[in-house]
Length: 358
Ligand SMILES: Nc1ncnc2c1ncn2[C@@H]1O[C@H](COP(=O)(O)OP(=O)(O)OP(=O)(O)O)[C@@H](O)[C@H]1O
Ligand SMILES: [Mg+2]
Image 1: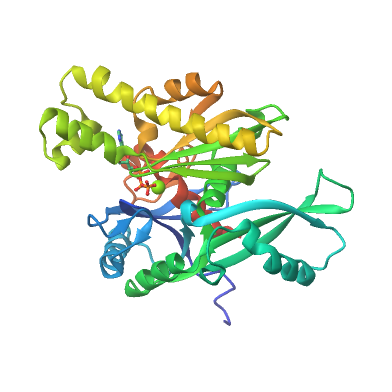
Image 2 (image 1 turned 45 degrees about the vertical axis):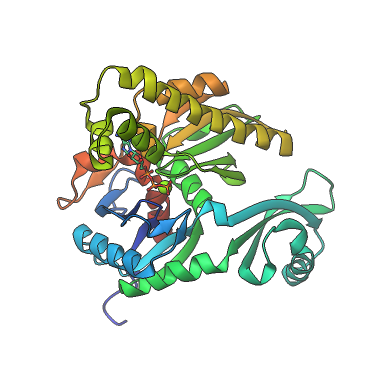
């Protein structure tokens, strides 16, 4: 419009996870420091139990109301958001196609052959593809990344946004959001591995561990397992006869018997490391081109004391706990101390917030 300039309306990243809705809005103030970000607004609100089950929204109304609360609490003015479809309902696969095909021909060919690659009924699936570049398999081939996501999952997310008065300006895939966040917010990431090595991100959340393998910023592999912090909470509650709320709180803030560390925490961390190792085994057996040199740890469980060392030892790779806000500044309405402490759990939201700068 005249006089108002062509500034884009603000966009926030919104991570609708299995246990919470997390919002993050970033800006990039002009200044002497190149590419430094500022957190404009941020909030997280727990979801009512049972409103998201295994990544699927089962109570759209409850999720919509939670989104409303998170928007209000954050104070954001953004009404456009970037959301992600969850890893488990997204299948990605790299296939090779003749380089001579036009985009349209490629689309036709992929649609014809998609049932070979996507293990869902095709009428339930949104298919997308991106040409990655020349294929190592032949000079006349290109590698194409296929992504199929289940439609029902997306429709439910959009309906919940609608209740909260938001629109989805961007629909991303969780793994891509994590990959973008790592590239943008982890200083020196490209020098942390050797050329022949790839990086993995392990997002250890409340109910799932998602392992993504990144190669030069591309997601080349994703695998998800159902194990997360809620199992640790349940075990604490059972062992020490506490309510789930009390168990969750003491897990984070202390106040558990000495036997907790040896009898409960250590076996849990071993199980996590084991699951990550299993996911990487699948990666190696599917495409043994590169070894994993670095595992970036995200999700709330990355805060468990010593988990980086346990995962490092079991996987024979360096580990690093993601701290996306380490180099950022904060608006006065943001509780920076809490946000810094919860950095690993905000990595998906942070990657989504970046889409406002596309
Ligand atoms: N400081 C901490 N110490 C121990 N556990 C923590 C800490 N902070 C968070 N957690 C645990 O991490 C989990 C939440 O992590 P996160 O926010 O990444 O999950 P989510 O994104 O909601 O779940 P998912 O990705 O599985 O859908 C909870 O089980 C919580 O108890
Ligand atoms: Mg999560």
